[in-house]
Amino acid sequence: MCKRNSDLYIITAGSSYLDIDAYACMVATTELLNLQGVNAVAYSKALCNYSVCESLVTKGEILCDLPEGMSKKNVSYIIVDISDPEFLKSSVPLDCVVEVYDHHVGFEDYWHERIGDGAHIEFIGAAATLIYREWQSVDLQNEMSRKTALLLIAAILDNTLNLTSTNTTEEDIEVFNKLCAFACVGEDFRDSYFIEVQKSVGADLKNAIFGDIKTVRNNAILPENVAQLCIWNAESVLVRLPEIRGWFSRELWMINIIDLSKNCSFFVCDNIEYQQKIAHIFGVRFESGIAKTQVPYLRKQLIKRTLYAK
Image 1 (cartoon, rainbow, N blue to C red):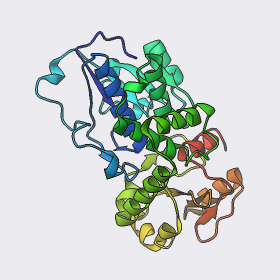
Image 2: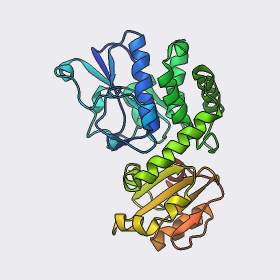
Image 3: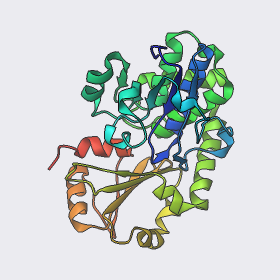
Image 4: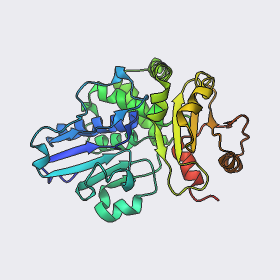
């Protein structure tokens, strides 16, 4: 990890919001580099979304502002949980990026051409798994703090839909089990995490939705704005659809509500044209703007499956 030629390494992610995977990866990468004597900080001005539970975070572990004079040093950037340069160029000087760790594919060639072996992009359950791989590569995994291990566990749970999604790999499961054993947590941690997430969503549904919305570009099947909620029980959100629809006004939008208890997704989309396209690709039927799937889908799976469809 990193060439250690800079005075400072800034670990950051997307500028629109931080989910638990991005948050955990930033913290874990910074801790690993600091353990190796590398000057590194986690930095982002983005707000955390509903998946980042208060019980798991520590104030100040991600900086919102860089200390005075820090930006004048010889600085390199390490990017986690995102690799689309369009979503990075406004907040990160791309020429200063030396490492990228992402589980959203599509920009491998771009980064391999720029930074060679510094690009770690593969379709895997969680970016957290890629970061843990780096800890293992230098045999420091047993030096990890428990609070960081808990962040990585939550990130894997969230990004693999409680280890049930089709993008979950054997490595994701292996890393999850190792981290649980290291942090001495059992099934009760899963329950407490998803219960806290559900409460967070219910307490501020509007910000939960708009805090995890992605602009989808160059896709003929999905509307431009695709929000995602991953919660234990979707019913509490579905009953509030009249309210939710008012928040979107006239925008073209869709919400992918992942219901972990039912092991499915609910697609919410009111545009008839997009309903027909989505129904054709995923074999679902919309009724009153809602379609229930046979299996749960992550948004990145929706985008990958529809990217080149017509």
